[in-house]
Length: 161
Length: 373
Image 1: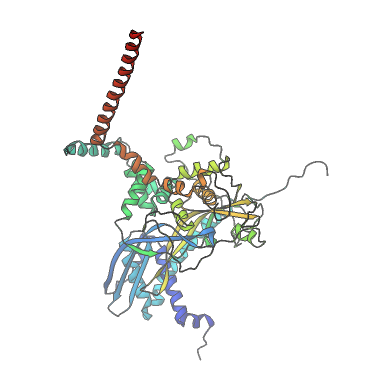
Image 2: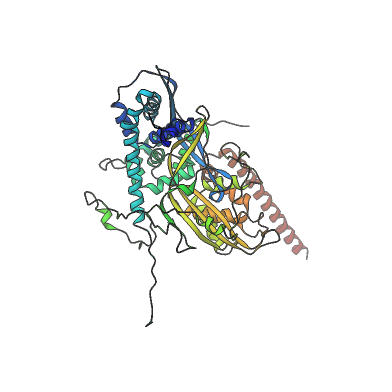
């Protein structure tokens, strides 16, 4: 008998699958173009067609008044996106800051492969996990360096008492 | 009669060629790479992204290189470039509480959750020129200290005081209400706070700094405290219609400033602390602080205060904060105004003629009167 852990059922629910794909796309978006290219070239590139050519455009970034209040427009960012379809039918998308069209295309193909059930584990293991680990490590370094600049206040005791 | 004058094409062409040569400078000195500019002149890059209102470090580095380091010219290039790109849409509002914080200080609370972290700052430096940098090539790489992290949350300071009711809450509107966008519609008055904040976020650092300073010196006092300044990375999320869910586009660096201002109360509101808000691209602390102070100044009407100073005058502030517009109008004065000036020349000539004629008549009148006597 196969026992289903709560995590498994989470992964299999539609919401869980969506959250997992969001994480995949976010990890690819955050990765450096060279890192995505390296992973992509290590794959046997599947056959695919372009649904939407890599395209660069703008997204207006919003902030909130006071941090939590009503939204306002802060300024724009450049964003490049792409959509591909594998010959097996899976559609992959990518959205990422910047203007790198090669990265957009490669990320969309990886996203599509991730959706193909036979390839998902391999993509997770060989591409997403290492990229995510590298990003976590970089953020950890930033946190550690920042932590070293934390102020420790102390009180000077003056007089004889 | 209007006579069109042509010419100057060759002079312009040659001037641009000369500019290209002068921009490059001495070719025995290596050319700057965009990576060098983005990595080592990050404050310039941040300023160009902020005032150009377009976050893209490589483009900003290119703009700085092309403009020979003229940051307003560079911001102008960014604004021009953005008009060539399609707009995909609006992001979800960034959540600065979830920032990967690289710096966070509060001038109002010594001991606050998450503590005071100085991060990479010029503060407390002695402002002495470091001649080691002048002879740096091949020298040792700088190393930063590290310390073990605790996953202590870093709540915004204004959320702490808010619990006591001492801090005015943030204004919350219907999430579906339209948000003003200066890139879509030109500035019009009265301008609500959404438009004002967008205008300030892309406004000139020097102009906002001067206005903020003026409020400290008594032109519309705001009694500000730096409640909190934080700088770091925030994730940008975008709802992709075709996917039906939000995607994370990546992270951008922003500086946020919460200015806290004593408010003595008015007919409309009880005494409390009020707030001004600053949010800018990159590590641009001076501007984030100035923005927050000017934002607060311009809220006089909503808080029932008296308007006495330039920094409170919404139309004055918003109409003059944009350095691309300002430089366009000021610098257009150097373009040919030959016909305009010819007309003025004729006018002044005629006025002088009439003036001298009148004076001569009066003198003649005086002498003829004297002669009569």
